[in-house]
Every structure is written in structure tokens, then in C-alpha cells.
Length: 420
Length: 163
Image (cartoon, rainbow over all chains, first blue to last red; front, side):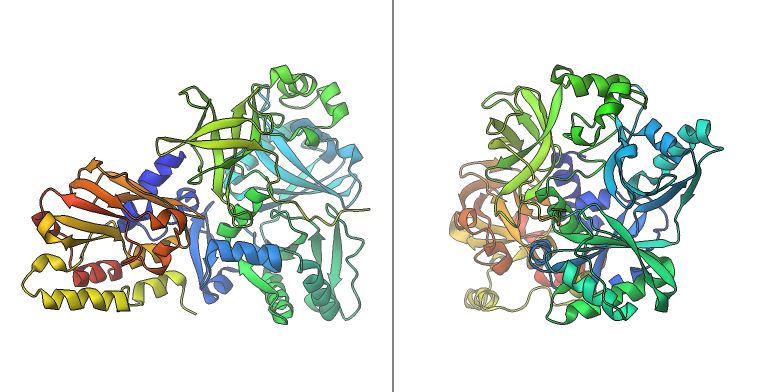
């Protein structure tokens, strides 16, 4: 989806006659035809005045009444926001072949992943090492992995998993946790709110101070007759948690968190709009935009998730390309980098040119005005050689060349609660 | 709580602000001059033949449009002396979430654009149909404006549902 196409085809002013949602073309365009699925929080969103949009086959809240995207964004940076991410696909892979299977399709070194620790990873295409999807893998034990993948990739991921699991099928059990909700509590006050909520509901003090970024744990809630899976993680750059809850209790837990957070006006629901600008400030990729089947993790700046011994051994899909790129940057034709852009924001699809010329050297894959910084930020792919911090480039916005400067990411300092 | 969208659709779109009353007032004073009322397009622009003696029209985006866009962070303005046909892209309005084209509601030549929007794009949110005007155009055919929607017709159009 190019910026210009977005602007032209989906512009509010132009085509608004055809749609209510054109102010959010990115989300709208991801719609799949037919009936939209609902998350366990659908009724709550509607009751709270959410503007619902089709996203990855679900009806999802993009924004809530009385707030702009910028205000919602700033609220999460300053206090706490609660996001419904139940549309994301939760999986469980168990059995003696679970690790071998994951090692065959990702470049991660899961032998080094301690129990109740998560890592970002990628499913890879054979030979090219293109990214099928990005995912979070959490170890619940040597033969037990909890995996979260993108909603928009659900069909192709399931086909990919089924296809590539064949050699391991007798040793691996794959379950999609369809009756499981997922909410993300994000922001500097997230820890206080969750601690208070868990302490209230369990009736005994719960201490989250040793649950560090990337860790997860189960917390038993007798009154709900279930164990919540709580991961210190998120997609905003803030400290926060992702809480996996059974479908039937998702609304109860969400209401409980909102109730606790309402004391002192600390919490608000936040939608896809703020989620997108928050993750962009944090320099994180959105699959389908910043990552796709033609992008390798090395090009995408995700070399850190490739295990060194895995790259050496080369026994995973796409290793032909990944291992070579891992060892030698000259095999990496382009890099994902951040930009500051002067004038209008450069959005997805905007061409990057060598300053003052028509020589196209890259493309913007995500961009917006940064509510935190008050200037335009973007990320995109640029020809190797132009990727160094401080490099000045031209970025074409509506035909006019604007000044762009290659910048390190994250744009806004992340505030993860890291182990000392 | 009503949804943002529902409230957008049911709320009177154009509240009679002081500015709006001023327009109506002027119009009464020059009763008989049909063109001195604002006209509206389906693409959510407004046009007012502000200086009939010189065929100069002022153009902007509607209150409804600014509300749907949310906070405006940048406005791409047309340059003076540029000629446009009806429906040409004359500029764009950027919010955190999206970029939206502004289309020329008439044919003509830009004589001035609202430079205040360069420094204060949020002026569009504060006063879309008055201080937040986009540009002034010398229109080729003032009767073209006559074919656009009246305030009442536009209000009915945005209330009519799927916009």
C-alpha cells in the first residue's frame, strides 16, 4: 500500500462518501470481506464508545470517544493504557519435537531460552530467508512453548506450520488457543495497577518486582478458577504486561483493571491508532508493512534474534541466505533504518531518493508525526551504504522532495523494566 | 456512551459559531447575491465567493471533515498562481493517522493560501470553516459554485449515513 495510493484512494476528504473509516486507511485496507469476528471485549469497546474498524478479520477499536490518537498516545506514555490484542493468534507447541520443529523454521537459539522467558523470533521462507511472520516465543519448559503470532497472518501461518511440522508431527502437538483473550497493559503506571489488581483479587500480596522485561509467569486466581499468563512485554516501548486470559474471564479481568486504574485517573482504554504510533516511536516493526515475505531478518535490523550457533550450523529454513548475511554485510543489499522527515510526514510507500536526484534508494514502510517528539518519524528500507546515522536523503511526499535524515531507533527511549 | 462516529453523524455538524453568524449576517446585508452563501462538496470542502467583484472564492475543509481527521499536524498548501481544474489535488491535510487530499471544488487560479496554517495547522481544528481556510482562488466560472450543495443539503448528505 503506497502512501500516495493511500492518500489518493482512501483520503477522507475525497472518498469519505464511500466509507466511515477513511480517516484510518491503513486499518481499513486490512479488512477482509464478510462477517467480522469479535474479540471477548467487543461489547465493552462499543459500550465505551470505541470507533470500531475492520482489522485482520476482526472488528477492532481504533480510538475511543473524546480522544485524538495523539492524546491517547500521550496518555499511554504518561500513565497507563489498556489494549485489546485478543485478535492475535496464541499457540501452544508441546512434545519432545517442539524445540526441533521451532529450530527448523526460526533462526532463534531456543536452547538458550530459559523457562518463562520470551524472545522475538521470525518464521522463515526456505532459501530466501524472507519473513513469513514475526512472533513471540515463550518457553514454558523444554518441551512446551507458548507462541503468539500476528492476526493478519493467521491463515498463511497455519498453513506454514502444518506444512513444516510434517517431519516432526509424531513428536509435536500444535494447538491454537482459540478461546483465549489477550490484553496489553502498557505505561509507567502499569505495574502499580496490575499489582493492586492481582493483590485485590487473589487476597494476598503479589510482587511483580522480580518479573523483568521478557519474563512471564502464571498467577493463580482462585475466584476466576484460572491461571492468568502474565508476560512483562509489549509493543509500545513502555514498561507493561501482556495478560492471556480465558475468553470467559477476559471482560471481568479487563473491567477489574480499569476499575483499579480509575482510582487516581490512571488508566484508559487505547486502540489500534495509538498502538501504531507508539510502536513506531519505539522502532518496532509491523508485519505487512515493515516486514514481509521478501525481507530477511538481517535486512530488517533483527540480526540480534539470530542465534550465533544457529547461523553457523545453518540448519533452518532460509539459512542459505541468513547465514551468509549474518557473516558478511556485503550480502545485505538494504537496511531498515529510521528517519526524521522535515515538512509533512512521509508515510508508507514514500520514495527515498539520493538528495536532489531522482535516484531511488529506498522506500518508507511506516511513518507518522511523532506525538512524543513533535516531529515526523518514519522507518523504511534504504540501499546499504546510505544507511549510516546522519545521512541526509530526499523523501518524496506528494511529488515534492523533503529532507530526511537517517536516525537511530528507537526514536523515543524505551522504558523496559530490565533485570539488573 | 455514543460512539465517536455516531455522535459525529448526529450532532449538528455546523454549530452556529460567531464566525458562522458573521457569514449569515453579511449575507443578509447583501440580500439578493446568491453566491455569498457557502457551498459544499461531497468531498467535504466548502467554497465561498468572498469577493464577487474579482471572482475570488475562499476554499476550506468542513467542520465535519476536521472532526473526522482529528488533530491536524501539517497542511500542504497550494502555491499562488497555480491553476487547477475541478477535482485536482490542491493540497493535503495530515493528522497523526492519515494523509487526506484536498480537492479543488472549482476551476481557477490560486491567488493566496493561508500561511497561518504553515505554523499553526491546528487552526483547522479550531476553525475549519473560517480562520482555517485553505486558499483563495480566482474562479474561472463563478456559476460553477452555484451547482454545489447548500448548507442544508450538505448537512443532510453527511447525516445520510455512510461517509
